[in-house]
Image (cartoon, rainbow, N blue to C red; front, side, top):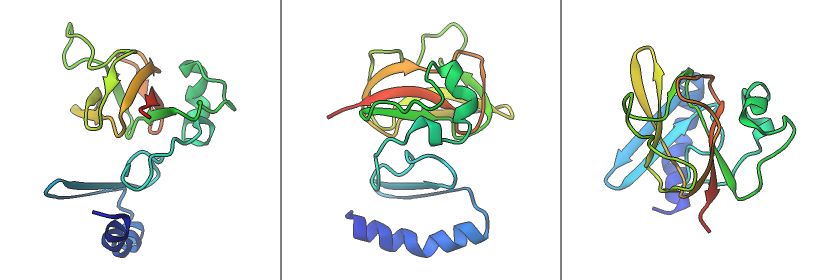
Length: 159
C-alpha cells in the first residue's frame, strides 16, 4: 500500500480520534497493520516515518535521560532509534524470572520482535520493535518502574 492510500485511510479518522480523545487506534487487514498513538514519539507508524526523534524532545526524557546515561540536552546519533515505553508500568527484560532476556546489546533486531514486557495493572504488555537494526544499549534495568515515554532501548538502524 502506498503513502497516498494510507493517508486516505487515516485522514478521516484523525479528527474523530482527537475529538473522542482516543489515544490508540490499530487497523489490520491482511499483511497491512497501521497503529496510531497520540502523544507517542515517531516510532508508531514506521510506514509513514522512521525518523528517530531527539531524546530531549520526548515526554519524560528530561527525568529519565540521566539514568539512561544520555545528557539531558544530548540527542542520540542520527542512526540511533530510541524505543520509548508506551505506558507506565514495570519493565521486565525476560519472559519469566530466571529466563534469559528477550534481547541483549549486539543482537540484531527485526520489526515485530519482542524487546521486553511492561507490566501495568497486572497485565503483561509485550513491547515490540518498530525498526530493524542492532541493539546498542538497554536503558533501564529489570524490575525498574518506567514512565510513559521513557527511553527503554537504543537501536542502531539497519542501513
